[in-house]
Image (cartoon, rainbow, N blue to C red):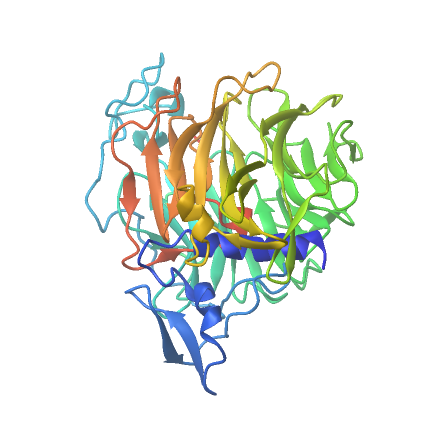
Length: 494
């Protein structure tokens, strides 16, 4: 089994760890342990977070352990129903202009007049000459098991589906925040369409840029746009393609590799390739391996200001066995994107003794603050008894209870923007949360916890939480996490 397959399965396990304390499931993926359903039926996660039998009216959920078949979807059709402005169905939770953002120029509150987003307070975007709350894009499932690309005003409870009915995923904003791209149709197949909508949303059909068939793409994966000048994706499990946001012919950028990410100029990009590590293209040149990155390096991330690149790696080739899945024990590093060098360790794997074994951890889901002064990541804990590993949060992981470790925990780590080294100790941010994502002004962190999107304001000097988190309850949609970074919340740029 390749590392890509193992890593996909592990993301599914992380998704199960993120359920609430009394929840049996947060989405249909969590119900795979119920066994083989009767013919014509499937197991689904209901509104009470319990697995139940339902008549089989949609495509059954497939194994999330491979990039080719992860997730569930049905055909969205071609009709374009009305799309309403996300957030209009629920009252405001918090004023984005309150106690957030005192930088020079960032002084216009929500609803105030603006000529550019730099006029607006943190968390706001200049939209139709007024400061409005930023959108966040996620993928979620509804009660019927359908998959939906969703957007929400970060400060207002409630989400709006971008696609029609079911069958859409992976919302990604353009670099100026005026468009959002997503995949619609059967997102697990080549018949899927890559489409864009304007922001603010309007009641019109999205514009189709290409299809999987036309772009020789068996499946759109690891879709990325902002801050790129083009939209990039992985063709199934490996190989990267791009297309202009106005459409046209898709071009093949690489024949292998995954996890594309754009530099702040919209032209440079990085990606990872199995057995090679991180490769970087600068100024349109052919990509070359970044000196100093281990061959196990993956998931590179640029920030918008500093020269430091973020990535995960397993330089010691340490693995653990979760059931039948052999999983790498990844650590988090930074390295200058120009010239490379010696990686700086930002979050290491850990081990601590417990009765009859150990409780250990690895790192997942890293993400930069835009200015490169903070990084967020998930530390996933597991117990190890002999060769057998069990993720904490499972009832059988009794050693985790002994040493008081949750299933997974989000941390914030301050980083020296010049050297890329750790600056101080990590700040515990949210237990049993996953997929952290900084707002474009660095003042908020969005994450997923128990199937709900949550947004927490932070003190940018200390990383401490400011006030209570804004919660988007899973009354209509449950946010999914089983495809890892593909499902990380994406913020609309300012």
